[in-house]
Image (cartoon, rainbow, N blue to C red):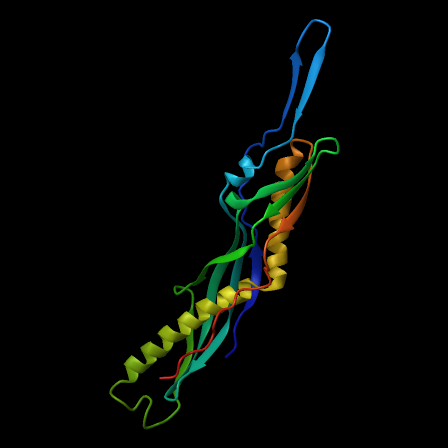
Length: 209
């Protein structure tokens, strides 16, 4: 069975207006000033919650078959790569160098979807003259084949979206966004990522019927 090659990528990000850092000068007396520095906090990032950092749009030919029938489709679909910023944490902070280390949870593929409105049947044929179209259940067999094929297509979308090259692009998008937020406070950020984001395992087999 042949599957997908992505056609294009679209980064999906939402940027809040600002992130707060503080600097205060407190007058303790007429002759003395006490200067207090406060490093940026993680709250304004974590408040963003689940953030879509990359959207993938995919299309390709797909073929599937059973002992009775064989069929092909032009498949269109999409998937999102997101990160749950509610679990982000600052692991190190240097107020002198104005630098932070931020640990982020692993990226994940969400909402893999076959676009059934755009997906088109390309071909359907019988593999056996006596057990394909020339049966009373030919339409039932065709419907069951398509349903199973679309399930497999959705699983494969998740697998393709979770491949290392797309995870790398998604990481870069997330890091650029968060770096831009902290840049408003004058801080630079280095990142740590949890887990392995090399891919998502999904079955692409079409059950035989």
